[in-house]
Length: 275
Ligand code: FAD
Image (cartoon, rainbow, N blue to C red; front, side):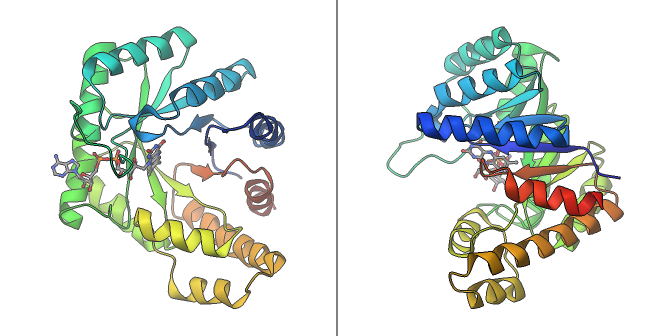
C-alpha cells in the first residue's frame, strides 16, 4: 500500500511554464495527494506567482499549502500576507526562514523560522496547519548537529504540526534523525522529502549548496553515464524507489515529492511502489 503523499511545485515564471505545470498537476492528481505545496522565493520575490499557483490548485479541488519564508520581512508585511492567504481559503503553510539572495541586506524582523511559527500562532491561532523544514543530514549553517536538532524542536514547540525533511539518499540519516527528535519529546510526523533523480550535474550542484549528500556510489554511477539521460533516469528510478520502499518499511508517515514541476519522475516512482 502506498503511503500518503504530498507534492511540491515551484511557481512558473512564464505562461508556457504555467501551462506545463497545469498539465503535470492533472497527471499527478492520479496519485490522490494529501496536499500540494508551492515554494516561495526568499525576500518575497515570487509572492504573486506562489499565491496564484496556490489559488489554482485550490480551484482544482486539491488542498494546497503555501510556502512562506520570513527572512528580510517585517511583521506588518507578514501579517498582511497571512490575511491574503486566509482570504484565499488557504489552510496550510510551510513556514520557513528562507535564504536571502546575495546582495540583500537582512533588515527583517524575524531571525529564524521558529520566530515565524510563533508569530503565525499568535496572530492566527489554529487557522493554519503549519509544516516546517528539517534536515536529517544537518542544515549547512547549523552550529552543530545538536543545535540543528534543537532548532527543529524549537519550531515544533512554537506550534508546528509536522516536519518535512530536506531530501537525502541515505535512509539511516532519516531514521536516526526521527529517533533523536523523539527522544527530545517531539511527537509530530516527520515526512521524508524525496527528490527523484533525473539529471546528474544539476542534482550534484544543487545538493552541494543545500546540505544534502549524494553518496559517492550514486555520484560516481551518475557521472559515468555522461549525457546518457535514459541511463541516468533508469538508475535514478531504481535508487529512489528503493529508498522509498525502505522508508515505507521503516515507518515513515508519508512521502513529500520535490516534483520540479514534472509529472513523469514522481509518477514512475509511485508506480514502482504500487507494484
Ligand atoms: P531555520 O529553522 O530558521 O534554521 C536556519 C538555520 O538556523 C539552521 O542552521 C538552524 O540550525 C539555525 N537555527 C535555527 N534556530 C536557531 C536558534 N534559535 N539558535 C541558533 N541557531 C538556530 N527556501 C525558500 O526560499 N523557499 C521555499 O519555499 C523553501 N521550501 C523549503 C521546503 C522544505 C521542505 C525544505 C527542507 C527547505 C525549503 N527551503 C525553501 C530552504 C530553506 O529556506 C533553507 O534551508 C533555509 O536556509 C533554512 O530555512 P529553515 O526554515 O529551515 O530555517
